[in-house]
Image (cartoon, rainbow, N blue to C red; front, top):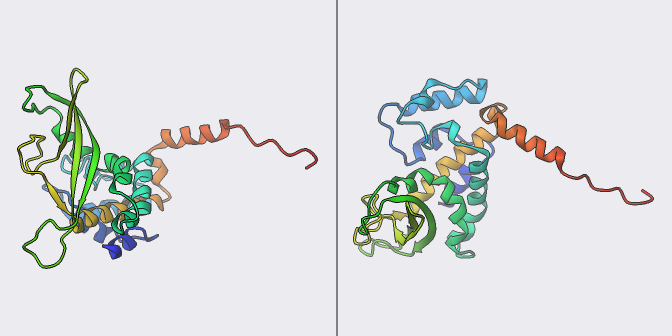
Length: 231
């Protein structure tokens, strides 16, 4: 796991390895096609039609998903995850970052009706449990993660906090989804590596020209420090 983090935060991560580690389904596009499309953008800034494929759009393989806000979330994960694994900090410090990184997964419950009969309109990650051993039948500790989300209905009321389940539902009597920590780390390591590769590309800002312009405008509008008298 530590090796995975070191690989993910290296200045020049390997795209092929990163794509292999990310835990996202690919049905219509091969890993080789995605790797070629990423390398082409890194070198030339060309956005391949591969990134418009339904099986790629919005997933970890979509370069247009890696907004500056998401990049900041990955930076937070890279900084905080080692402290969480070592027990120096609580898993809750990762909630804000993981809310952005796993937004598409969390939003899968939207539109479902729960046992109250109400339709879920919004969901938010609010709790992370780090379990010491998720499989007592295996030798040694098998750590894992359970994610808890709060759901909100169309009228704005809260449906309470409940775990994400194996069936991607929010039913309280369904089986909670327990994610093996090593699997979660592999997925995050792959996404971290891809984000690092994009960040070091000369063409990254071309993906979000308006956001880059807004950031530049904000920096120029900030008050400049007043020089000390006598300087």
